[in-house]
Image (cartoon, rainbow, N blue to C red; front, side, top):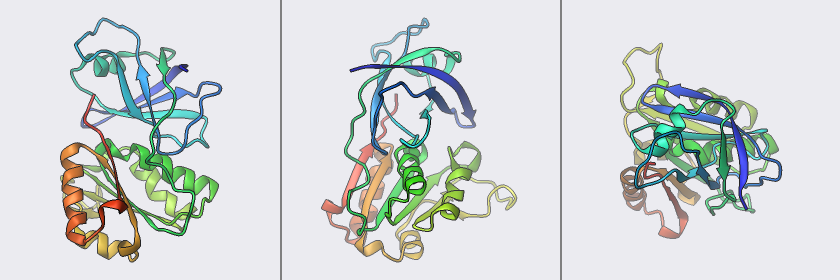
Length: 239
């Protein structure tokens, strides 16, 4: 079953990153962390990949709007998304995906996000905080600069609302000015995980991001001795 959703607005960030806000169609249901296919109208851009892509839902089921994040580029899909005006209608497929919060809450969860791979984790962290699910979550978020990092400030406030959610962000290209960024710098590492997640040895790990980033994170977790059955991966290969 498909659903029609109207574009409310679009926020462009540095680094060609954009956040899209849509009205949530009546009857559209999803679990925090899932994705759906998005089909956009023809606005004059065409290529062999077409105008339909699977996109992770960045919003929580507790919110009234649907949020999607995309790194803009030259594909017909991305150009169309960049040019759509508020009020434009897109078609959404049924929500899918198994990288969601488990029913049991006793096992700690560690989320490893790179770039726009934050989308399912923003959904799950927002849902956990809004509904007090009881999950213990540590989110590690790696990006280039604060300006091009979606939801950075909002995610930083979530631990104030729900003490079972921790958020640790690190920047790889942030200016040295502490007024711009006074947090961690460099890529995610085993030392960062051990330092900021005391329960890392018992955790289940969720990874989301570009394939190269996900491969690097899996290698890091292998070095930590994390068993493969405690690693869940969702790839973002671009659109």
